[in-house]
Amino acid sequence: MTKKDWLKLISSLVFLIFGLFVFVATSISAKSVTIENPLKYNTFWELINHLINFAFFIAVGVAPLMIIVSGFFFISSGGEPEKVQKAKKMIMWTLIGFAIVVCAKALIVFLGQILGIRMNIPSGGP
Image (cartoon, rainbow, N blue to C red; front, side, top):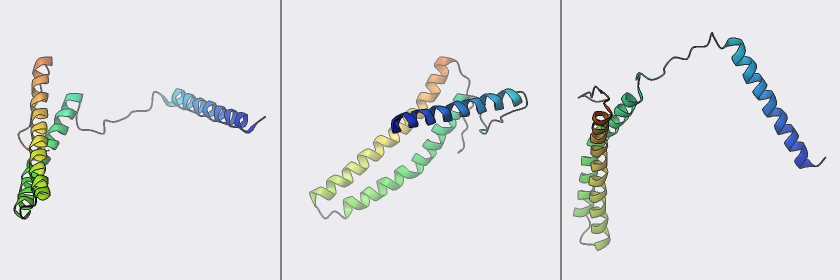
């Protein structure tokens, strides 16, 4: 047998033993195993809504800071075209990113209404 054949044989045996172990373990204690929900959300939509709210509140805090930083870059550019362009791009991408987060929040509400899913949208932070 070549080295390649030995590797195939050993890997096949490992998978067979592992599969047998899983089968035996689940068949012995299948009725006594309970897995609790690690999240505090009962539906997928509640989880998505919470993630979007979290991203929204982070963006509300970060976007003004990024605009202030890019304004500082703009003021301290000294008229150099590269630095002015960098500051303009920072402002543009900050506004685009914030618009995406706002649209995502609106999209969740819109899809929930279309699909008939009733969501409790909290007004506070995460």
